[in-house]
Amino acid sequence: MRENEPSLMVNWYEVEIFDAAKNKVIYKNSFITNHELSESNIFKMIVSGRTRWKVENESNNILKNQGYNLEHNFGHGQENLSEILLSLNLLAFLFHNVLDLVNSMYQKVRESLVTRKRFKT
Image (cartoon, rainbow, N blue to C red; front, side):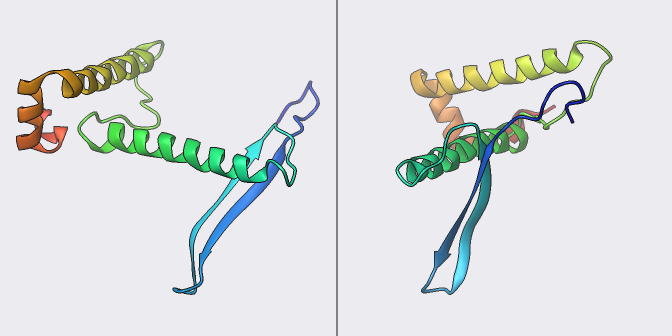
């Protein structure tokens, strides 16, 4: 992968949460980090990795499935169109969140529409 430079040294760990009552794995994921792993910091690393995954996953799901039509790869245009479309989507997401926090009329509209899918043309 890195023809002219040495490979990056990383640490890998896997997390599996097992529900004994259901006799089933309820969560499984693996993470790569450049931080040193030890018995004293592994729990913090697990919490950090799961938290980062949750934030990224939920944010991507909102942007993809709640009317913003954001895919992982726009793939449009030859030069800068994909970056412009991403920036506009993120600006819309930002404005919607600000309005949701401070504007009572917008909050009432959001209560009645539930999802932003109705904003599509």
